[in-house]
Amino acid sequence: MNTLIQLEILRTLRNKRYLMFTVLYPALLYVFFINAYGTSPLANGMQVKTYFMVSMATFGSVGAVLTGSAQRISLERKSGWVRQLRLTALPGRAYTIAKIASCAVTTLPAIVVVFAIGAVEGVSLSAPQWAGLALALWAGSFVFAALGVALGYAAQPDAVQPIVMIVYMLMALLGGTWFPVGGSLESFARFNPVYLYNQLATFVQPGHGFDLGAAAGLAGFLVVFVAAAAHLYRKDTKQA
Image 1 (cartoon, rainbow, N blue to C red):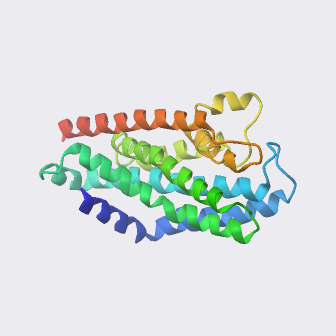
Image 2 (image 1 turned 180 degrees about the vertical axis):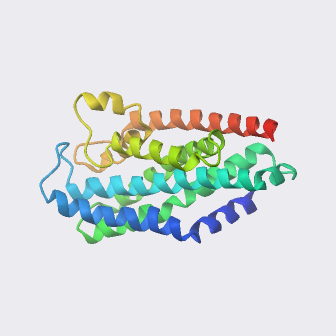
């Protein structure tokens, strides 16, 4: 399983589309948003540079695991690579775990690059806050890695890309990626994993602690998505 994880990571990091859309694109959007919004605090009281540093880091990390895992699995199903793996001694759960783990590792460049630009732009956090924020966002990415694996088996290979993009953009739109979510919309946003993901960063605001409710919600989504991925993998095995 370790060999498969290493192979998946190397394949992703060598992919130019991955570098463009999940590392460079969020970084460019971050620069755009902080210039477009100016220096006034947002409606939720958070500084513009800090807020969009987090939201663009989550945008990049979700994109890295969601689109990467789903599309790669669909291509592997279409090419017959998954069928070949099933003939080996690798158990199904090991394949699923390897996909989730390797995808989650590839989120680190997306997070680190945006954080580096944020630091250059003047985002001021203590060393424990920087480390805690990076750890929280990296851990949260496992949820979307599991969702990506599930979507990769749920959709037909020819349809997986538009399905993933629709899911991805809707979750981002209603999850606080482009603007703070408030009012009546916030009660619905609590059922959106991207919103909960962004909420993991609220502890960097003065007077705020770590959002245990958001962490618990993401843990629940992780269980659901992993169970769905395992079920769909077994279903695909029976159909193969």
